[in-house]
Length: 306
Image (tube, rainbow, N blue to C red; front, top):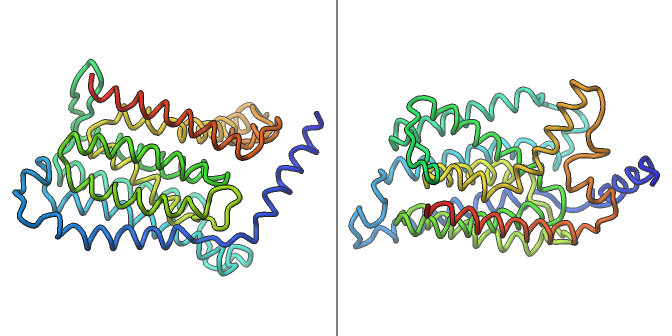
């Protein structure tokens, strides 16, 4: 196989998508936020507080969800605006990658502070071993997971419908977990998110008629981590969202290998592009990833019961 020519063919194929409209995710982030704020008061009518919030303060729980969702959405919106208006080519008001990464960590630490000081969450539930309280170390773990999943979703969304479909599988799993925990606020947010995401997948599945963009990419990945943290199921989050971590991990390995070993582990990364390189069709990669995502989701939900 002529690797160079194959790489050029893959790049040429993805260059053909350059005219596809982007920014659909901006609409989804706004829609999900508004629907959540409109329907939340309806949910609270004639229901005791304990039946709704599973021990959490409603103000802090809503604040955590919206701070993460809207905050990371605005950070991703910056990149979308650069692309939509062509500022990326001119270099107008551009932030370097390091600056954006630092802002991600600041946002993640702020969200983690809401979880730790506002909701008093400082624990993780490890199957078999039980609940472990981490104290202030929880802030570091939570921030790390939020930043990791924000970037992992963004990396995985390199094929039509790949990231969105995997996210849908994760959300359905956590919807069931939230319902089991009797957390109706989180259940409501996830349900609205699922509905909007299904509508988005209608347009982004192969061949994509629109791309979500970075606004939803940042918001969706980071908030998936927060959903897992609110559920207290960090191990389940890692398993259920495992496909995101595998795909993003392949990119990380590539970067580390090039920086330290001065050579590539893969001819191309992330791994979904490597599968294209060896001859897999885009639809085949996406469908197989969804199947693996379902398997991991089932296993992750099972872990929450042991």
